[in-house]
Length: 56
Image 1 (cartoon, rainbow, N blue to C red):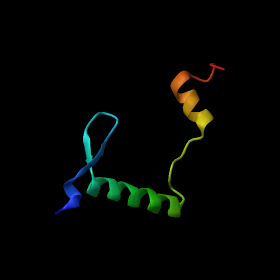
Image 2 (cartoon, rainbow, N blue to C red):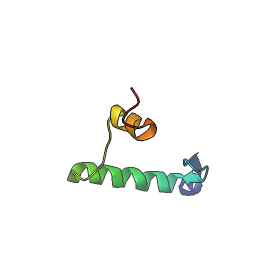
Image 3 (cartoon, one colour):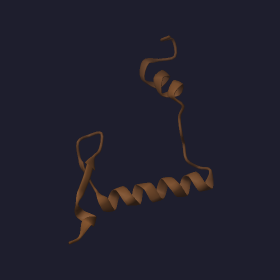
Image 4 (cartoon, rainbow, N blue to C red):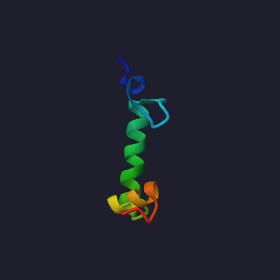
């Protein structure tokens, strides 16, 4: 049995994500985190991106 092609979830657009793709994404994120190049956002920054900076 090859688990690499098993669907483990769906992306924001509803496209299936396989186990192989998921593992590759996690490895990339961990590499970027280790290198200090991972772009992250606080809860407040995300809220401002969604609702705008003038929404309290």
